[in-house]
Length: 342
Image 1: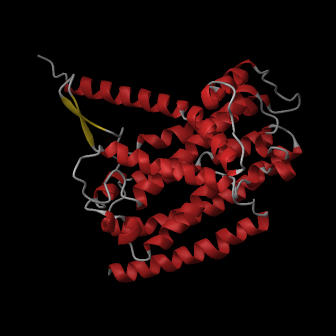
Image 2 (image 1 turned 60 degrees about the horizontal axis):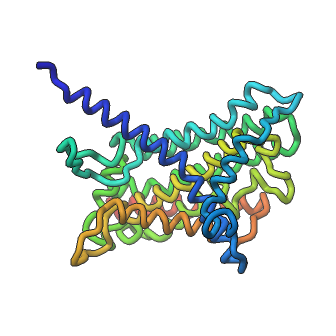
């Protein structure tokens, strides 16, 4: 009889890809509602309240509005690149999750088989995630340039300088984790943090909190979240690189932004906060996926809280933080960690 194992493996991977894609496409629905509620409570308002109980159907109404809204393409724009730019931002944001683990294994009773909670355990997972995620900047650059409009072009240029600058600090911040884990696999990095809070990289690494602070700040700048949202600064650039976009093409840019925010929240948990491992033993067992998603939810809330608390930096301040503070501190950390590692 023919061996059905490879066929079953391919089927399981295909199912994982479909489920992961659906999950990521649904993220803006809870995230947009939650972000408005967080903003409302911080600013002593109710937030969405009329469309459904406590406004829970407001994201659905927004989705319907974006579907039926006219798709406008400026007359003098480069029409092909203008239409493709949102996809150039969205596809890398989705492709990152090929190598992102959400847990180790779960048992499926129906097929009596253990299934991993990741699509692929790449031995260069860290490099893959950082390199693929960095490609999203091309969508912003191309969208700003193809619009043939001044504000979008300036937003695209700002984004180019910002994301290239903070990618350096972001990559340096991961080196300490790789040095202490002896692996570039995200699964290996999480498994090394098993055994409680003191084995998590936030506590285990030499000057772990400093490593984490560099990564957190640089990751917020990478996904253009306030106070680092200079590419879409409505105060000076209208809406920046997506000023000329409407309808579903605008929605794709927003989807890419929310997926990127979720990605950096996941990476913060994997690299520094123990992944799916519990901080201490409990008398009862909590599934690993609950620990993981709970930690990720804390970071998602943190990003939303920061957005409605801190003011936006000026552009020169943005560059000063990246080149004169984060990168020198990261280099000093690399030297210190290497010395202690030896």
